[in-house]
Length: 618
Image (cartoon, rainbow, N blue to C red; front, side, top):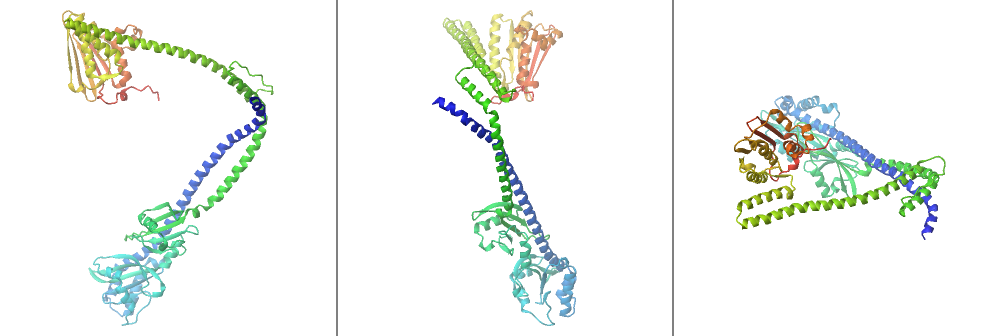
């Protein structure tokens, strides 16, 4: 069965190569095209939405300008003394003259006339007289339409305002009942705080409907002018969706977007729509109105479908071309790959000493180079296996040594504890206390693997050491420890004080005549701990002090551990605290020695690793 598979390999390998190389070349191409398509579509969609939003915003300005013209006419009339005098009758003259005078003053000062806005005005005074630009009444003639205007609720509301008040609202035409809905801007007319009448300037709603329809995007778009309560005032002539047919949820969405500018997407009737909202602003009057444009997403992005079709055709052409090229290319590399396949089978059987045959295809090519590299890899693999075996043996030996090193301190400590209890039972308290001190020191040195310990623990260790040294040297010296109580729970480097104390004993107080004294003081200064270890021993010359922290000098004496204690401490402080740690040595012959150490204060439970100096060169 295995031989049959090998024989079939030469028939199928060529097609496998074609398939995998085709996949190798086409997969990045397809991914690139898909990514480009996605990115391109997103960019194009964003530009389409922004351009549509700018168009909608521009048309909202057009609506705002028309409303601004209405408001300016109303405000101009309310501030025009001549108009106010004509309305109140103070100007005198016949009714026709007053009609003409009001018409002249309003039209003359109106920018709406220059911009050809289709507006008309209506004025009613406190005497019930009716003035309008639509027609003129004869002398002494009254008109029911003026009475209807006076009785309108909005007009009554303006009438009873004793300060200047204005309002935009939608109402049927007061003058021509068959001419449809009008959009009015009304205001009261005051003179010296006296109510003279009410003016309303109207424009046909159909004018605004046509204006809104200019911002429709696609055949299925809709546009509305809604008030601050979410009620539709005017909708575009060609709006696909009628406002009264919209669902309650959609109306609530429109109401929630009041005052927001820009566009967003939403789902309505299983179709994605783009919502464009822009405020209709009138200088001097807060309408609270908003122009809303709703368009199906497909209408805005319909041109993208043609772009995608072209992109798919280009991908198909690339697939065909690459397939043809790979077919001819596979024939060129089939024979050396067959040889390479045979050699991999030999290596798979565990034959790492195999040598690849010389290639007979002519000049050396990339496939032959690959086979040579494969042969070298087999040799390297053989060597690596041998190295791994050797490393495993070394590892087992190291583990055994570590286990032995771990057993020794435990054995010594347990033995010392047994001797201490024997001395205690015999009444030799001094010997028992000495053994206990030595045992505690062993525990601190060998069992505790921490790098940082509390000040209290470190001082306890130093006290045990000083106790043993006093016994050894028959109370040749006394000592004092004066450290602030608040510092006791702070964290410091382990074994920081004992080497300094040892130097003070060996090189300070022992050579001195008489009893010596060692003092350890500690205090907190800002964010640092300051420890000072002093002795009243024989001291040393400044030249000798200068060599204690000299790196070159101490490297040469590295095998003499007792001579490099201070240099070693300084190296450890620099490694763990960085440049913020300082050690200073002061001494004079016959006046003792003082070693001061300053390093960052770390509270218990804090992150002492933050103070470890980084070895990163970046």
